[in-house]
Length: 295
Picture 1 (cartoon, rainbow, N blue to C red):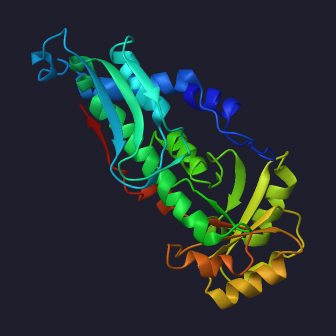
Picture 2: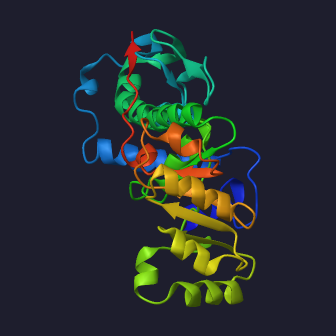
């Protein structure tokens, strides 16, 4: 719980607030990296790198093996620092910048033994965060300037903060961070109760929280039209119905589309005039970006 609390103060959105910049706390980065290093080094450390002469000093190039949006450099830097605080990690490309294959991302100077101990954990952070940022950016470019791409709660457990950070680096926006951030009335809530009843209860109890309501038919949309909530989530509609739903709803609500969103469909979905498109795959299925350390 503590991890979430200090991050929410730093940069994560709360109901009704806009995030002007991305900022992860030093404490969060350090504690996250410590857990990753412990996973890799417990119980006996790096027994292979231990074979290397302790006095051997090298300068290592961190290079991108593909075009990408870079993310996670502060995590990589912290990884080396926790192994050996005398290692110099010189950043050449900032988080959120675009790199091409062969570009120098950072220079690392220090004892070879300690650099090799930290290598894989540092690259894992860099590859994963860059992968999400890169995939998000592909969707952002296809959706165009008028439609926002946002992530969901379909994240790897305990990596949500990192993954949502990566989405922002790629030009996307964050959906709710957790279940307490806003009301999101979805199909299974409706199946367990009644749509209009749930919406009215949320309006009565909202206390400053945002309310989003999911519908999958025009009939459902019309049944709650005019009730005072924030966003209508149009789920799994074909393009014709989605376009019609946006036309009906846009006077009253922010509009969001979800379901069957991929790189082949996102442009057509955006063309309906929807304000936002939520995409689960940018966090749960993004391919890692390939980086290497070159001595």
